[in-house]
Image (cartoon, rainbow, N blue to C red; front, side, top):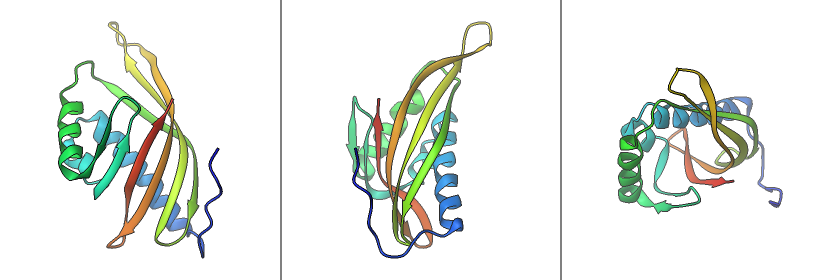
Length: 137
């Protein structure tokens, strides 16, 4: 269980939509095997814990992005839903569900996995970015 985030002020509707758009850009970057788009979702010293691996900082994030882009088994589709966001004008966090699907040998969609995302965001130069991305199964 996570403690409620207590920050002064509140997020605007635009902030919430921008964070949701960031989550979508992250999913598309992963599914489209686009390391540059993936890296553009994170601050330079971001941390990512995906359960079996933790990476931190620009060099490790770049190595992970290249590794993930080269993984076989495409196409994969990340579906991020049930997004709860709290924070203020400068920092926020969210909890969401991620369901992954892929295609079987006959082109039919099948369930490939699911987890929770626990994310922390910061606003830099007017843009929301991931500061920490955590996957919890």
